[in-house]
Amino acid sequence: MPVLGIDIGGSGIKANIVDLDLGEPIGKRLKIATPQPSIPEAVAEAVKELASRFDVTGPVGCTFPAVVLNGVTMSAANVDEAWIGTDAAALFREALGRPVTVVNDADAAGLAEMTFGAGKGREGVVICLTFGTGIGSALFTHGVLVPNTEFGHLHFRGYESVEDWAAASAREREELSWGEWGNRVNAYLQYLERIFTPDLMIIGGGVSRRFDQFAGHIETRCEVVPAKLRNEAGIVGAAMAAAAAK
Image 1 (cartoon, rainbow, N blue to C red):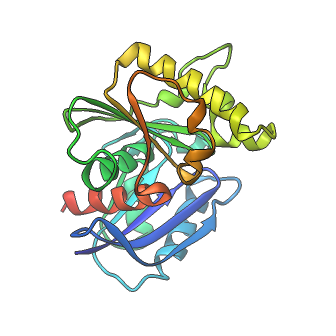
Image 2: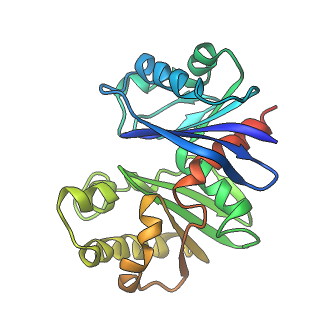
């Protein structure tokens, strides 16, 4: 069944049609820049414009970089603070004129990886992390999602949010080598390992395709692997959420 999935981030908004029987995007993925300032009305208009480029009807799934409770965004990570307390599902539903389901971006990516990707069939405790503008997280125990964990906002080494130090954007901003950045990621993963004792950690986001360039710097007890769906996981998870909400 084809469903439109839209992945909203702090710097870009991506969309594609997803075949949920295969767990794969079909056709060409489209991406536009997230409006700046990223106030709700501007982002809704951008989502409407992007959705209009796809010839598919029915419900739409949207991810968002925030704690999401029943379609309401309760925080604002790397987007305008006007999103706090916004009924994002209602806003996008009005803009698109059809049912819209909104979920935390990392939760969506994690659900996709656990269903179709690197976490498929894995038991125990699994942590999925997306490294991009910030750091998103999804925690699973025996395949069941614990939503809205937001491990990227843990205080770490004097930083109010560890993502300020270890996100992919930090590597670019500080012009770190892959090895230097890999050492930061390793310290962060070891910290999570001490708290949660996971059986598996999955590294997602755009950096997943460069995993080999920093994997040698990761020293953890548990297995650490790149996401199989890579940067498409959010789109797939968004479509899954929309289909499940029908």
